[in-house]
Length: 194
Image (cartoon, rainbow, N blue to C red; front, top):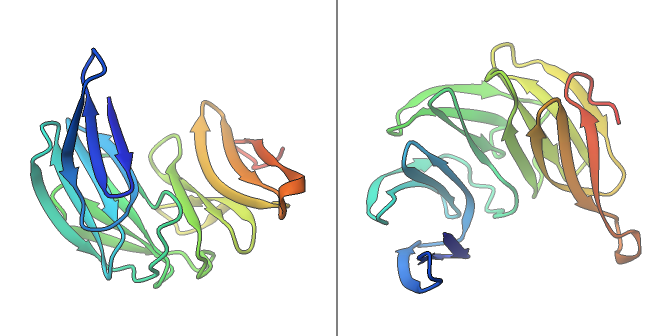
């Protein structure tokens, strides 16, 4: 098991013993994804960096990501079809990288606001992503091939994360103040409706 505390990974063995300083990051980790026995970590900075580690904690590669938003909130990296996708809020686009960090294409996404909080997750089928925005509060499914919004659902409250589970999109968030509490909304994957 791996545990991350902002900039430091620790590893725990099966008996619960901790190996400290497994991986030391230069700044806050924004998103961590595992793929093909490697860990892809999007790290806050100016610019952001994608840092890749093997399962022993050895750094395999690093490349710069152009976003200069400086917000460490939200899952802004996902892996689809052996490609690394990273949100670039500054330029309202999604940058698609090969697994070794070469820029393959950039997909303009004008619906993506310059928000302090954007979250993205892979959608089923490999040709779209789910993007959650904090300001304005909304979630939408975005087609990576056509740059079209398949559906958009405006929300009440502050959405923070999303995940696709089967034919459902799970969106987690909280109300505008502490009295409204924490919530998870389930949306239809095809339509975006509750």
